[in-house]
Length: 65
Image (tube, rainbow, N blue to C red; front, side, top):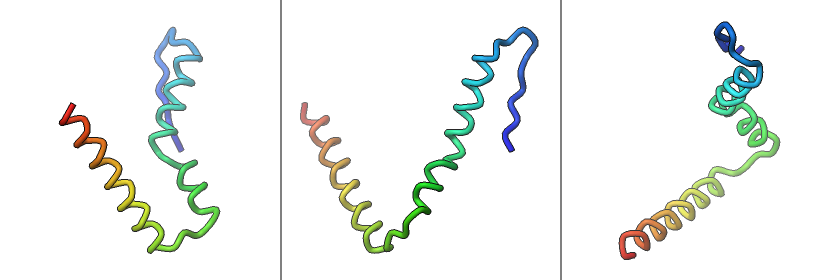
């Protein structure tokens, strides 16, 4: 359960924004979506390698520019 301390005179919008930010950091929704279907470990590792290669290409292009 998330607890958001609200100061005196603080608007509801501000408190709601704090709550949403804290909720996003817990990654609950992301985990729920990931658990909806099973992904084989080999597929996960392949996706990780593809992401790493893409990131490496991006960083090398930044260094050259």
